[in-house]
Image (cartoon, rainbow, N blue to C red; front, side, top):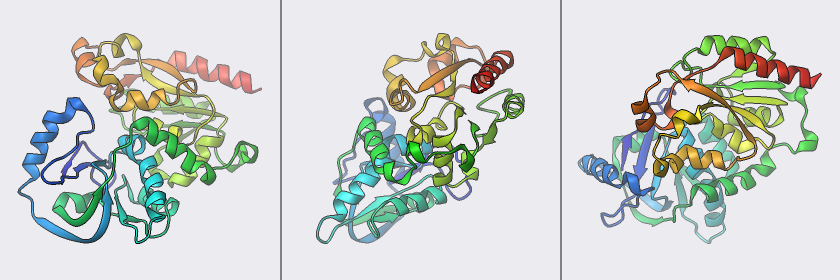
Length: 315
């Protein structure tokens, strides 16, 4: 059963969460969310029921939120699809994706007919009842990301085959939403003035975008879910617009590593933060909102100096 979760900028692809219930029991993805998960599931119990015939494998928890989908699930999809496909009379793995293009890329990466890919809207409309299904173990984010990088390795170019001629040499990746960066227009103009291509991930196919990010000589990224594109493909240092530690340190430490915190730690050593102030300087918001949810204000003078320094280093 599923419910709408946050918002999605992609038409007909709502952002959702889904849980598998076996004999009325669900599995939580993290202890702090148990209470709200319990009440959320209760609200969905009266939905229409639809039977899904056949043999399937399911995960305890799914989401079509891009950041959590990559950080918690994509590697597990790729790994389990291959493991299950090796069985005699294998069950199909029920999968979900944050967009149609990512659904197609996922199908391409997995063995033929190993997946049953459903849209988020299909999950939202009814509660699906499976007569023959196996609930798989939930992998940790670290396991998921490790498997993901290994499974994708053969689908991305190796270092000796990379060339800046195959894509933009300098990239600034962002969602182009002002709720993420208050002075977004000025920031984009500054990057373009220094020879950067400003890319929105939803405007490009996943495979093309990952190739470009991997080969770019200089890569800057908006904080939040955007960085998951680099986690998938980047093996060279890059810059990340990030909330000032004076503000982010106020957020509860036991919640900070849920999601973005643990994902970003996977690239410790590659990520070079460019610290920014919050659009609203509020100790209350520092405590209530995850650091990656805060709207940032970029110091244009400091950014100009960094980009100019990079340009001089390339000469």
